[in-house]
Image (cartoon, rainbow, N blue to C red):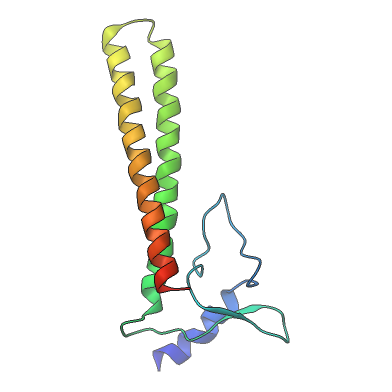
Amino acid sequence: MFASLISPLVQNFAAACTDRPTFFGLKPWYQYLNLQANPQTGACEVTNFQVLGNRSDFLLIGLVIVDDLLRVAALVAVGFIIYGGITYVTSQGAPDQTSKAQQTIINALIGLVVSLIAVSLVAFLGNRLGG
């Protein structure tokens, strides 16, 4: 019953199947859901939206949200690399500021690598589970 109530809402928000708009490279929430083009309107509709069970679509929507958050984390890590580089250049050879800037760059690089690996893992899972 719940699926019959939410299915029309989900169908109205889906964009064209081939045209998935992105905002700064972030994936839309329906990225891993099964979409099918409506021949009359040309818009995309979500097919077989399952609320409960072993193939619940809420898991796929959650994977897209996690994927987008990890992409934002990667962008923040790049920002910290730039910040650490600017701090390193402007430290004027002061040992405490130089070591602090180096540690910022190292931590940001570690965060960037972890987030890139996690993004690829989440995208793999989403594509295998969804479609």
